[in-house]
Amino acid sequence: MCRDTGFDCDLQKRFVEVERYLAGRPGTSGVVVRDLRTGAVWRNGHAEDLTWTASTIKLAMVVDLFTRDRTGEITLSREDRRLIGAMLHTSDDRAADVLWYRYAGEDHLTFNENFPKYGLTSLTPQAGFTDYYPYWGFQKCTTDDLDRLMSYVLTKLPAGERAYIVREMRSVDVVQRWGVWGAGPAAHPGTKDGWSEEKGGWVTNTVGFVGDGERYTLAVMNDLRGEAGFAAGRTTVTEVAELLFAGYFRD
Image 1 (cartoon, rainbow, N blue to C red):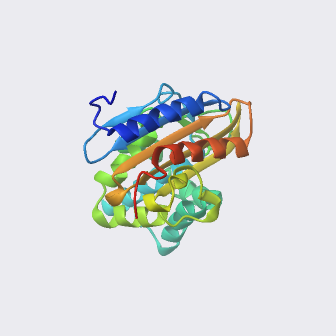
Image 2: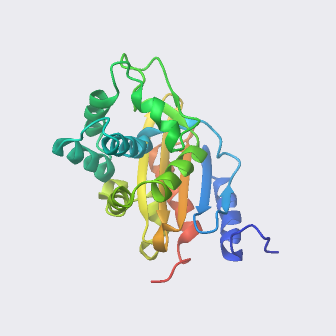
Image 3: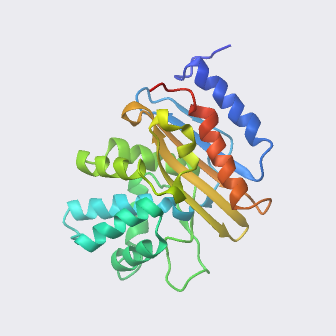
């Protein structure tokens, strides 16, 4: 029977299918779906697991850089803005490095001090991997954190910044056309993916939005826990998006 959860019966059935699918996949996956129109949220039992962020943290970096530029704390150059575009388009690690070293501050803490404002309240930098600490490439957060970050982008940023990020996430390079992208073209998806082999094994993460007016947000963090590699993880998070939203929207 369809329950009064804020989601229609079709989506509720899709949530059950996602749970069934994930039970047979390698590792563990946190999943959060949010309806920005009604405020309804569905999350599974792994949504609060601390997981390596991989490159999903680059989305938070973009938000912070735009925010500090808007308030006059920094002044982004044309080159900085090109690097921001590269982080979103191809998930360029070198671009992230340049911007991190340039704007993390003398104590290296500025980004991490600001990230909770955008929803990353559980974000935890991981020590012992680099001399430069904290560093964007070695941090952990939860799927709930990514859900809050995506909601912040879509509901709190000024219209121009929001429109830029939405446009970039909807036109990512082929290297990122998985994860939320699996919702299919009728869903008009936008995505920021993250993938890396970390201590403990591969992680494949995705955060983004689907639907008219970016109504629904989706975040998935797949910690493969050494049970499989990148290809399996990419398949898992893409299939989750497909199960949730493929065929749900009509052109």
